[in-house]
Amino acid sequence: EFDQSGTLVHSWGGPGPGYDWPQTEHGVFVDHKDIVWLAGSGATDAQLLKFTREGKFLQQFGKPGMSGGSADTKNMGMPANLTVDPVTNEVYVADGYGNHRVIVLDGDSFAFKRMWGAYGNRPDDTDLGPYNPDAPPPQQFRLPHNISISRDGFVYVADRPNNRIQVFKKDGTYVKEAFIAKRTFLNGAASGFALSADPQQRFLYMIDGANHHVWILNRETLQVLARFGQQGLFGGSLNVPHAIAVDSRGNIYVGKNFNARRLQRFLFKGLGAQKAGTNPPTTLVR
Image 1: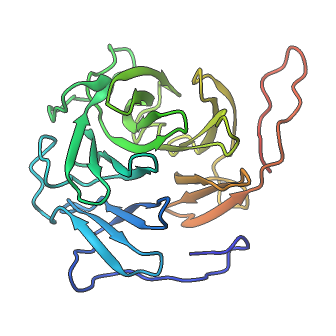
Image 2: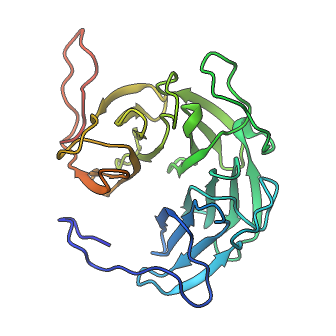
Image 3: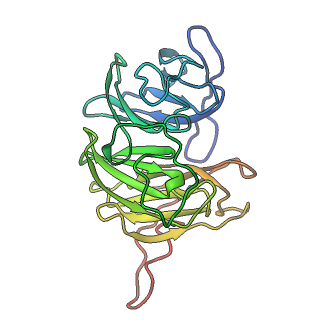
């Protein structure tokens, strides 16, 4: 835990009695009750963990090495990220490095509620083969890597290697999708996203770990408005951005792995002016 200046306030973690710490810490989320949720993407990670803000263990779902695939309702399969709906206290998991689904559990009892794959289909672990941007869109997720819930009740899923965002209702009903940098190969462009802090959440900020950008989208239309970031290791540059968050003031935090291994904070400065006949403003932040 850090303060706004980047000073370490508190830290905890690692193996302990009563729970199985993941091989690879990947997704972390602090919910409306100040509970800290953790998902791991290691080869045997099939669990979710819950802690207090101070690091006291509360609860575990699933057991390492016990994943039964995308039909399993008792374990995860190398889950990537998660979010908690403050309205229903349900936890939504982008269960993506091993499985290919969104799965929803009760946030207190861990009772299974529902799950779905791309387009709201039943999750399927069939190998989709190599990504082909010219082929019809695949009917399943390749790797659902991040998930968010908007205040108006829509669920946004980043399907990273398919370079797309899919939008659903909370019951799993498919609404729409958008492709971003569709001809991106390797790890894919749709790494993850965060919603803007304004009451309407007008913007969706999507990190692109393959092209080293943050894309700025109109949340309602999923139209790309602008982007910021370029590859590099100096201040303000991005190198394989892999996590993103927005605070209550609209500031954007980007976590990067590989050579950078750092967090950066971009201060929200409002909307830039756009001249007639020009491209959208290049950035919303500094």
